[in-house]
Length: 202
Image 1: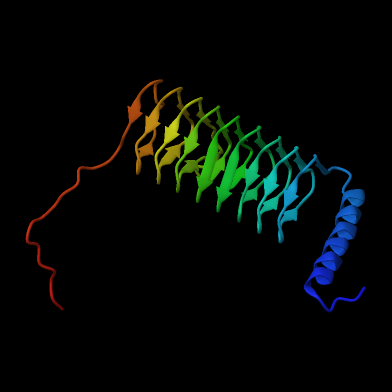
Image 2 (image 1 turned 180 degrees about the vertical axis):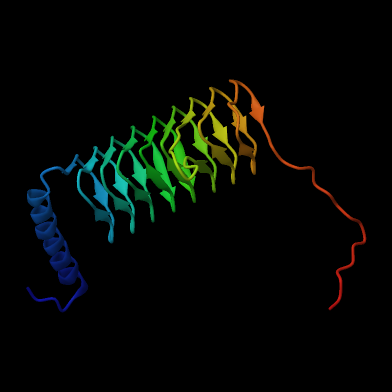
């Protein structure tokens, strides 16, 4: 094929990608793709990955041992480790890592978070910088986040712990006790402001 113009180059690239994709699909017996799935460049797909219809995997994401249902968005720069289950209409955003966790319908983990040994219910939002603290140096513990929960940014959830339905965790909190339904949990020290403060000189 003559690749002197942009259109021919694009067609050549598309054909080469199709050949590589077909080769990968034939080789990976434990990996499957649904209909209308979009895989952007530089995605790594490891063993035992199932991706449902109309899902979108964005660039530089890494997937292994993961089940993704339909209409799910992943990445960019997401890492889905073994035991991850993403139900339909969920979102895993940039720089999010999941492991042995299930995220239920319409829930989002959009930025800079670690979700390990965790179940998240429906219609919940996990704020940027949230960490599930699942390991005490000896054992792993589980976190349960129920339906319609809002976790504020930069929160640490120390497992074992349950965040019950329709509750809110305030940003910057370290949560060590179960949160009751329809409750606000907040652990922050009071802000101190010193007027007319002068920095020390060297």
